Length: 530
Image: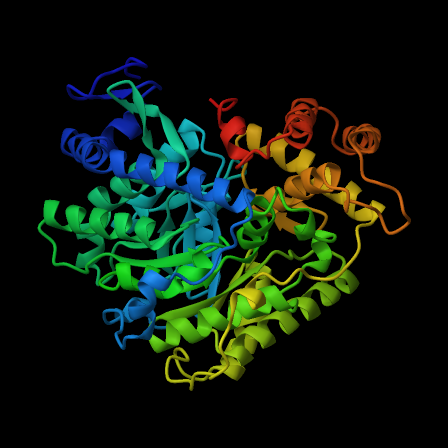
């Protein structure tokens, strides 16, 4: 193992141990490439993050998001994204999960058309998780990935596997273990840079390519930054323009007003947009955290059939198909329960209804969180979408307005909903702080996005007068603390103290008690990670 503070060139420093497997990835040319990315693009990233803060101040002051008058010409003009390569033409069912070795093999083998290897919401970004993930993906690209469990069970890839897409971290997250001039490099540049530089030519030789999912964009300017990074990366490796292909997750309320503009900025690279529903709901709460009139009901009641979410979904389909891009449906978080057929049938029925809606509306594919749901979603899309996609489906004429996208869903706040949010937040944070970012809780697969909804609702209900239970009680910090203690007792009784549940509870209390809304739970959480 190399020195923890080994300097790989005159500017880039590593502040974590470099195992031999990591050194094989972090070659001098790759390290120089990451340094070049940081040198050329860190300043623009910082400027765009400052613009997020400025925009939030305006929203806090009463400004409402709307379609931008200055980009009306882009929305009204006729143009399309670049042609989509063969491996990405059929994406009817996609499965997602962290870039963990056994997960990668099982997901690629499970029958889904696409697997998204995640460095973001379903991965706790410890140094080991990030770098082990890159080792795993190199072995995938080389066709050599395999795994043997402690019990001796061997895992290897089937002859027919899913297409792999990588999701780097969002612009807001740093990689503290890699620094340039004493400052952390953006996690997005690290995740993208290592995967692209290490594997792009290998993948192209296999008639695949460097494919990416881009998370949590808030503007077309942020999309343009990715487009310029892609162009820089392709030029560095002497690859044709447009070699890289990306799908953008529309998972912030402000990005919903710039879907055309985001596609336009990335038109040489973008093959579609995705309804990142869970982060979208979280963004809705976060962006309007100061607004009393934007208090939401229990998260279980905020479904895709509510007006603001259905409008967002239909607008995404309409926008994408007009531009020759795919409109991907959202994640089903249900997971099968072993040995409980009655519970599973209820869950499958809900998933089936969700996918019927998506396929019927015109989505070109959908997401699931568990291999057991792949056949359920696949049956629906095979039946409703006999072709590889629905790009030729006629567009609806109905316009969507800001009023549609900002409509508050009806519903109630219940004691069960508050308690569920508390328990889910504590359990998820305890796992995340222990290095696991994808956690089954109450028969749902929770990741950072769903946990963000849970903790942000607690904050919203405590800090606004409308945070009132259906039985008339106000959700207060004191009531939260009482129920937190009770839920923590239940968690300890069920799971013991193998995970840092008490530390997670303390972090949650800090997040919900603070007067100013904390933008992402992963920011203070990351300071506690190794």
